[in-house]
Length: 391
Image (cartoon, rainbow, N blue to C red; front, side):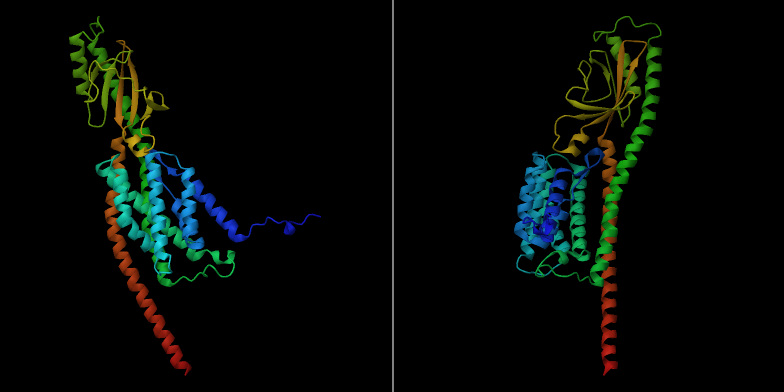
């Protein structure tokens, strides 16, 4: 009878763990957590840090290099993966000759020096202002979370049982390390929850409140056009100056800082516009060179086809469009909401929370250090007293 134990190609536990971690690196490099408005989170470095500490720097670097073959080959993806490789090399070189330190602090040193400068250079060509600060802050927090999760897995999961010859040290978690992990998790996790909740609530607001607002504006425009046409407009053409003036006055009376209104004929030639980028006589075909997703009847999510390699920039240039027809005249209209305004709300909320959380983190870190020192002092006193009583 065939005996699996006699089969020559058997994987030991150490090799099997590496294959699993290698597979997770490839998977997380190919499929990142992508949310509405182009917000992306990556968790690849969690598994690279595990490979680094369990198998060594050469294996971690080789794994990161091989992952280049599965990432989308666009500038931002390549740049961020190179930054990830640099991060692993930086942390690995620190520990290469047996130096002792918390991996989190070594990685934090990277993000606050090399990583900070690199993030600015990668993001600056695509986004400015609040969006730039958000991207830098989000990526740094993402990096902090990844190294913290890797550190916690190394501290609490008994990987040493899978390795031969005691090549991996046994778990030994101090009260100070435990408090450190709990404190950082309680600070960093809310950042991710904050972004996710705000994206979700903004999306609900768009689909509910903005749609209702747009329908109301549509009805008002239709009524005004009907009133304008009470005597009958006989000439619908761009040469009819009276018609153009009346339509532009109507559009300006309904204009808002939140949206633009464009009126055109069925050949997409613009008759009236409240947008500075779209002028009368232009041809406004919002379907051309755009990816269009219909969210409801007459309600569209329109994103440019270009710049696919940088989702946040792509969404920044996109719009929510509400379309309708003017029954009294052979014209149609579009109410255009720039998506950038909804992104900016999320940026502002995140950056405000980031400022307060930094202050909170410093206070908590100080308190943890004090509590840890008092605890260790009491333990030492108890140990001394016990030894004295024993004599």
